[in-house]
Image (cartoon, rainbow, N blue to C red; front, side, top):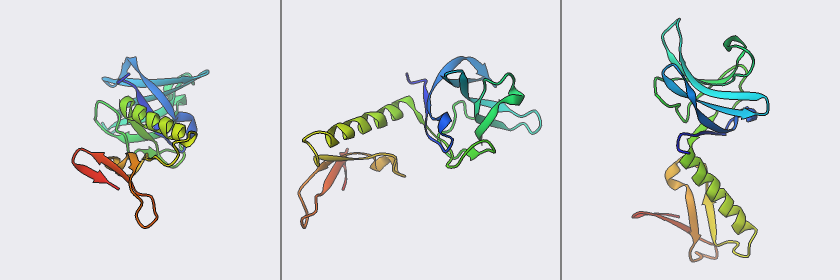
Length: 165
Protein backbone atom coordinates (compact mmCIF):
# COMPACT_ATOMS: atom_id res chain seq x y z
CA UNK A 1 0.00 0.00 0.00
CA UNK A 2 1.00 3.66 -0.25
CA UNK A 3 1.65 3.80 3.50
CA UNK A 4 4.50 1.30 3.17
CA UNK A 5 8.14 2.37 3.16
CA UNK A 6 10.96 0.31 1.70
CA UNK A 7 14.59 0.32 2.66
CA UNK A 8 15.84 -0.37 -0.84
CA UNK A 9 19.54 -0.54 -0.03
CA UNK A 10 21.82 -0.39 3.00
CA UNK A 11 25.18 -1.70 4.13
CA UNK A 12 23.39 -3.50 6.99
CA UNK A 13 21.53 -5.99 4.78
CA UNK A 14 19.24 -7.18 7.59
CA UNK A 15 17.32 -3.86 7.57
CA UNK A 16 16.48 -4.03 3.84
CA UNK A 17 12.82 -4.70 3.08
CA UNK A 18 9.23 -3.52 3.31
CA UNK A 19 8.10 -1.64 6.43
CA UNK A 20 4.37 -1.34 7.08
CA UNK A 21 2.78 1.62 8.81
CA UNK A 22 1.90 0.55 12.35
CA UNK A 23 -1.19 1.69 14.23
CA UNK A 24 1.12 2.54 17.13
CA UNK A 25 2.56 6.07 17.01
CA UNK A 26 5.77 7.40 18.46
CA UNK A 27 6.62 11.10 18.83
CA UNK A 28 3.20 11.95 17.29
CA UNK A 29 4.17 10.31 13.98
CA UNK A 30 3.48 6.97 12.40
CA UNK A 31 6.14 4.35 12.87
CA UNK A 32 6.93 1.62 10.37
CA UNK A 33 7.70 -1.98 11.27
CA UNK A 34 8.99 -5.11 9.58
CA UNK A 35 9.09 -8.57 11.14
CA UNK A 36 11.50 -11.25 10.07
CA UNK A 37 11.08 -14.39 12.14
CA UNK A 38 11.43 -13.36 15.78
CA UNK A 39 13.21 -10.11 14.86
CA UNK A 40 11.42 -6.78 14.55
CA UNK A 41 12.84 -3.74 12.76
CA UNK A 42 11.39 -0.25 13.11
CA UNK A 43 11.64 3.12 11.40
CA UNK A 44 10.49 5.70 13.93
CA UNK A 45 10.98 9.29 15.05
CA UNK A 46 11.81 10.41 18.56
CA UNK A 47 12.67 13.73 20.14
CA UNK A 48 15.59 13.86 22.55
CA UNK A 49 14.83 15.11 26.03
CA UNK A 50 18.45 16.33 26.23
CA UNK A 51 18.71 18.63 23.20
CA UNK A 52 15.15 18.70 21.81
CA UNK A 53 16.25 17.40 18.38
CA UNK A 54 13.89 15.15 16.47
CA UNK A 55 15.54 12.18 14.78
CA UNK A 56 14.32 9.32 12.66
CA UNK A 57 15.85 5.94 13.49
CA UNK A 58 16.26 2.58 11.75
CA UNK A 59 16.61 0.04 14.53
CA UNK A 60 15.93 -3.47 15.74
CA UNK A 61 13.32 -3.27 18.49
CA UNK A 62 12.56 -6.81 19.68
CA UNK A 63 15.10 -6.89 22.52
CA UNK A 64 12.96 -5.97 25.57
CA UNK A 65 13.29 -2.24 25.99
CA UNK A 66 14.53 0.87 24.23
CA UNK A 67 17.90 0.67 25.99
CA UNK A 68 18.50 -2.69 24.26
CA UNK A 69 17.46 -1.58 20.74
CA UNK A 70 20.10 -1.95 18.05
CA UNK A 71 20.40 1.39 16.22
CA UNK A 72 21.71 1.15 12.64
CA UNK A 73 21.00 4.57 11.10
CA UNK A 74 19.49 7.94 12.05
CA UNK A 75 18.83 11.38 10.61
CA UNK A 76 17.88 14.70 12.24
CA UNK A 77 14.45 15.64 10.88
CA UNK A 78 11.13 17.04 12.11
CA UNK A 79 9.36 15.66 9.04
CA UNK A 80 6.19 13.60 9.60
CA UNK A 81 7.65 10.89 7.34
CA UNK A 82 11.19 9.53 7.25
CA UNK A 83 13.54 11.20 4.73
CA UNK A 84 14.63 8.96 1.86
CA UNK A 85 18.35 9.84 1.82
CA UNK A 86 21.30 11.30 3.76
CA UNK A 87 21.02 9.07 6.83
CA UNK A 88 23.97 8.74 9.24
CA UNK A 89 25.60 5.37 9.81
CA UNK A 90 25.67 4.53 13.52
CA UNK A 91 28.03 2.21 15.42
CA UNK A 92 25.90 -0.91 14.75
CA UNK A 93 25.21 0.14 11.15
CA UNK A 94 27.32 -0.59 8.09
CA UNK A 95 28.22 1.70 5.19
CA UNK A 96 26.80 2.59 2.77
CA UNK A 97 23.91 4.29 4.52
CA UNK A 98 20.31 3.29 3.89
CA UNK A 99 18.14 4.59 1.05
CA UNK A 100 14.38 4.58 1.56
CA UNK A 101 11.66 4.60 -1.11
CA UNK A 102 7.92 4.98 -1.18
CA UNK A 103 5.84 1.93 -1.99
CA UNK A 104 5.01 3.33 -5.43
CA UNK A 105 8.61 4.16 -6.30
CA UNK A 106 9.86 0.78 -5.09
CA UNK A 107 7.07 -1.03 -6.94
CA UNK A 108 8.00 0.73 -10.19
CA UNK A 109 11.64 -0.22 -9.65
CA UNK A 110 10.71 -3.85 -8.95
CA UNK A 111 8.44 -3.91 -12.00
CA UNK A 112 11.21 -2.53 -14.23
CA UNK A 113 13.73 -5.04 -12.86
CA UNK A 114 11.26 -7.91 -13.44
CA UNK A 115 10.58 -6.82 -17.01
CA UNK A 116 14.31 -6.38 -17.69
CA UNK A 117 14.92 -9.94 -16.43
CA UNK A 118 12.12 -11.29 -18.63
CA UNK A 119 13.60 -9.55 -21.68
CA UNK A 120 17.06 -10.88 -20.85
CA UNK A 121 15.65 -14.42 -20.71
CA UNK A 122 13.56 -14.11 -23.87
CA UNK A 123 14.13 -13.83 -27.58
CA UNK A 124 13.59 -10.06 -27.29
CA UNK A 125 17.19 -9.50 -26.19
CA UNK A 126 18.50 -6.09 -27.12
CA UNK A 127 15.09 -4.45 -27.57
CA UNK A 128 15.35 -2.32 -24.45
CA UNK A 129 17.59 -1.51 -21.54
CA UNK A 130 16.68 -0.22 -18.10
CA UNK A 131 18.43 2.39 -16.02
CA UNK A 132 17.61 1.85 -12.33
CA UNK A 133 19.01 3.71 -9.33
CA UNK A 134 20.86 6.44 -11.24
CA UNK A 135 21.89 9.58 -9.36
CA UNK A 136 19.18 11.45 -11.26
CA UNK A 137 15.75 9.79 -11.10
CA UNK A 138 14.86 11.73 -14.25
CA UNK A 139 17.17 9.49 -16.31
CA UNK A 140 15.82 6.23 -14.87
CA UNK A 141 13.47 4.15 -16.96
CA UNK A 142 13.12 1.99 -20.05
CA UNK A 143 15.21 2.92 -23.10
CA UNK A 144 13.96 1.48 -26.42
CA UNK A 145 16.40 0.38 -29.11
CA UNK A 146 16.71 2.92 -31.92
CA UNK A 147 18.87 2.98 -35.05
CA UNK A 148 22.51 2.01 -34.81
CA UNK A 149 24.99 4.86 -35.06
CA UNK A 150 28.36 3.89 -36.56
CA UNK A 151 27.58 0.25 -35.82
CA UNK A 152 26.76 0.97 -32.15
CA UNK A 153 23.18 0.36 -30.92
CA UNK A 154 21.44 3.49 -29.64
CA UNK A 155 18.70 3.50 -27.00
CA UNK A 156 16.16 6.30 -26.45
CA UNK A 157 13.67 7.06 -23.68
CA UNK A 158 10.86 9.61 -24.13
CA UNK A 159 9.50 11.43 -21.08
CA UNK A 160 7.02 14.05 -22.15
CA UNK A 161 8.82 16.39 -24.53
CA UNK A 162 12.25 15.26 -23.31
CA UNK A 163 14.31 12.59 -24.99
CA UNK A 164 17.19 10.75 -23.32
CA UNK A 165 19.79 8.65 -25.17
